[in-house]
Length: 79
Image (cartoon, rainbow, N blue to C red):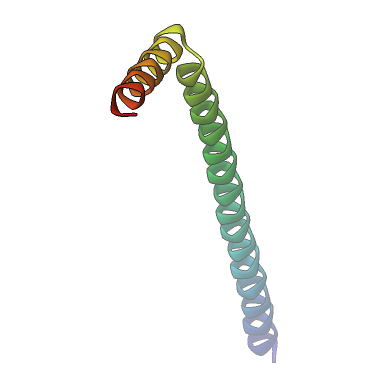
């Protein structure tokens, strides 16, 4: 009779241990997902800021103005 009780207690302990392990694995995956989401959000913000800086740089604005002038001159010649 005591052997059955010992086996039952060991089984309950094993089940509790495996459930605790599954929760930590689930938490790890959840935390990993949150970290990936945060990193991708930060990367997107940095990329957006970099593109805005490039678009507003002096070289970019001078290039756009030069091309616009050339296109206007070409339209004037063709008209």
